[in-house]
Picture 1 (cartoon, rainbow, N blue to C red):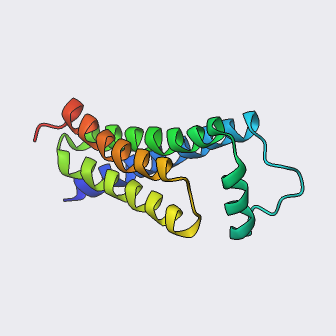
Picture 2 (cartoon, helix red, strand yellow):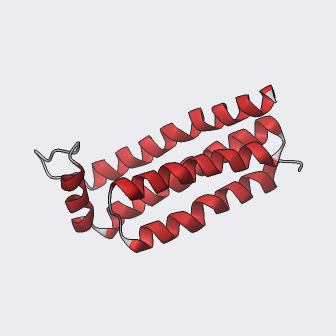
Picture 3 (cartoon, rainbow, N blue to C red):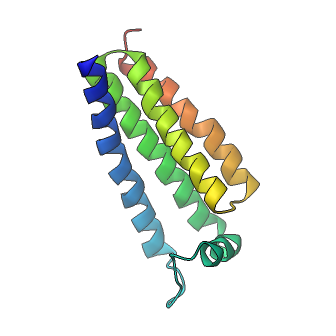
Length: 130
């Protein structure tokens, strides 16, 4: 039980910064307009509606790569699939929370709902025994 918990926490600790790094790269390549209040949900929603596809792909890539890293770490440490699936479910839940808080294009939601769970399956298949 403790090994499972540690593997889940380690996966999250490893995966969350990956999301931040990929998002940062996306912001460097596709900077938001200066003076924009990124703490205002309505402003962010309007910005997302006008962002180029490349910038939105960085968002999805961050979520997918973060979930993949988290799943791989959890699977590697635990050698079981359950922690990998739990970490993947947490990432999917966080993505869902983001979708509820800020409207996103339908293709982003669909891609996330397919690709994030797929990372859990890949991670479990690579390192978990059962």
